[in-house]
Image (cartoon, rainbow, N blue to C red; front, side):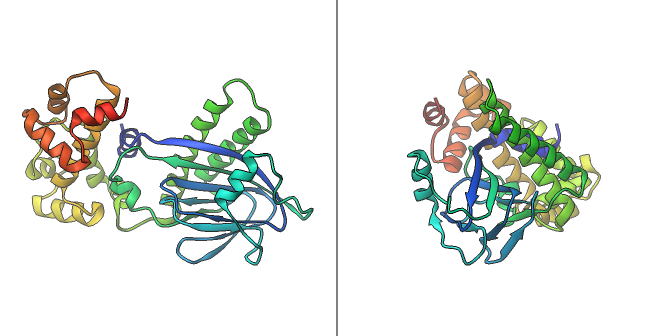
Length: 302
């Protein structure tokens, strides 16, 4: 399994598509800070986004904006339009009260969010910028985004048996293509995404992720990927923003979290499967990282 797939599996990516929004000008929404990553895709009409870093982004039809950290932002037909707080908008929609139907040009959006189950966030997620703006279909990955959007629209316009599950799967495919397209557009030189593009550092990540039970050392990892210990340590820390063994420890805990939810194995077996022969030592480390013992964590997720 490649490194990104392993990370998404371990962080238990979940997605929700709200619906297709038809909004008649003038319209605007103030989106409050949220713990989930959010996305907006412009299907037709006019749309402007006030990004978390203060920029104003004019979207073209087919464009997508992704807010990885759930930061407060705004979205409107134009910057000068009055904006409604998002909780009021959601409340009105649930009550069936019409909003933004003043008779102006209609904008159609698809919106939704992505959830990640584990805290603290993986470095991959923490290193994403405040906003990712993906322009309409230029590359292969963007063409895939177009196809996914078209399938979403079909499900939203024609609700059929299994539509909710179909939308969930399509939005997860959308997330992966957002990341792929961002890597193509931005070509980051540092941070975790750049580590995924570095053949040797990516191989080290894959080794740790596929076999956390191994007794990895700095020297054994460096030898496996053909680097000196010092060069490997410095390059890994530069790109991942933590040392190789610190990453290994955190990965083992994330993997254990996943196993505690999905497997019925006892805690000593799970501890051994992620590299800890001492259950007591595993319990202490797990609690220091998550704030709960493994047993309490398992109970809380039932």
